[in-house]
Structures are given as C-alpha cells and as structure tokens.
Image (cartoon, rainbow, N blue to C red; front, side, top):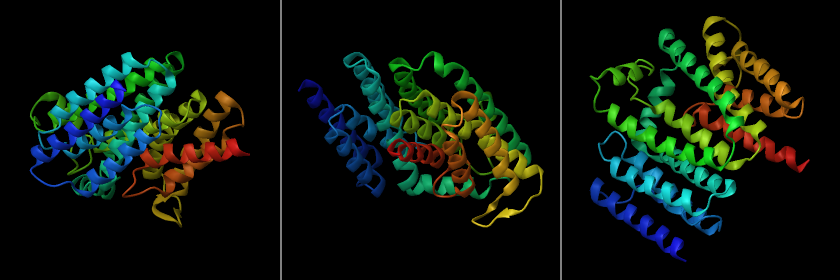
Length: 315
C-alpha cells in the first residue's frame, strides 16, 4: 500500500511540475504517456512502473529545453526505490519496459522530437564520413554488449540499464547546450547534418530497454543487439559502398544492404542457438529494410524480434 501511494504521489508531482515548467496544457504526447502509465499500474506487476513510464516520457518532452534535469532526479529516486524494494529480475524487467516505453512514446508523438527524427531520417547517407563514424561506434557498442551481457544477465543488469537511460538523457541535455566543449564536439561529429545531439541514441536506448523488458531469453536479446548494432551498420556500409538493385518496398534501401545484414545475423544466430532463431534474424533484417520515419529501425528491429519470438512460442 505504501509503494502504491508513493507511485501515485510521484506520478502526480511529475504532471504538475511538467505543466508548470512548460507553461502549457498537456499535449498529445503527454496524454498518451498518461494512458500508458495507467496501463502499467493496472498490469499489477509493479506500481512504480507507472511514474517511471511517465517521468521518462516527460524528460524526453523537455529535452533540448534545459528543463529535463528535475525529471531526472525523480527518475533516479524511482530507480533507487525500485532497486531496494523488489530485487527480482521480473520486477526489474517491468521497470525497464516502462522506461523504454516512455521514451518511445515521446519520440513518436512529440511534435518537436518528430521533426528532429524526420531530419535525421531524411539526411541518412548524405555524408559518408559521418555514417562510417556512426557505424564504427555502433558496432563497437554492440560487440561490447554481446561480450558483457551473458556474464551479468540478472536483475542488476536490468536496473543498470534504467540508470544508463537516466544518465544518457542527462548527458544529452547538458551537451545540447554546451556545444563548444570537447565532448559535445566529439558527439556532434557522429550526428547527421542539422540533427541535434543524441536523436539516434535515444531510439537505440529505448529499443534496447523494450527488448530487455519483454524477454528473459539471453539468446533473443543478443540476436536483437547484434541486429541493431552490427547488422544494421553492415547494411549501411554495404548499401553505401556497393550499388545493387533497390528494394521495391523501400527505395532508400538496397538488396546488397539487406543481404549484408541478414547473412551475418543468421550466422550469429546459428552460432549461439543453432537454427532455432533463424526466423528472428530474417525478420529483423526485413524489418530494418522496411523501416523509415516516423519509426527508427533501432525501435522497429527489437519490436519486430519480440513479435516474431512470440509467434514462434505459440507454434
């Protein structure tokens, strides 16, 4: 009962603070986040998932406005309370899913973030140097995650992912208004032309949180990360370097890029689980080839993998 009361209190404080800080009524993004936060409450799995979903969404809504830091404090408090109240993998998963959902809702429905995402999508591939830098960093992050995660795939790793989300939003908020410092310039060098710092990273973190929040299978998570971080990057590199026929359902993507992602992802899936998860590798590659604004492939790939894995579990 005390945890439920705390959840409602944090939830209400977040709404009131947002309306005061932004000097405006609730927008469509916030309304949808409110609905999702109530769904998390009614799921009965963990009351604190309700304010966490909303806080992550509101933090995203205030990003690039010098206003997200107070929300990060609330999120951090929720994270600490959650960590010490119910130390179980299932409970942490719900927390992680709530955080990823809150970020994704704002990215999909917030008008300002949608414009930034649109620019990010329309400038994809325009600057080969930037694209290669992005791909190198993305591949390195994927390799690091694949090496580390099997050793820490427990409730501690799920809690750590939530805190990583908090830290990421905090860093993006700081860097977006301190463009002259060295770290900001380095991060900006990885962004496409006219795209604010971190738009692609937000999608990546959100997609990873949702993936980890919806499955306990280490193999599925690793295949998802390989597809997002390594397969997707290989598709971009080959698609930009080798001229092949364009896909009929996505004129921006090519058959060469599709194969460059599908073959290594199939090989990785076979390496860790045989042919069991071949459908995940194939599905992730097809989803990436069809992805585009308003849904980033770093979001559509993990969601597609979860849907396919659910269908496989039925049969």
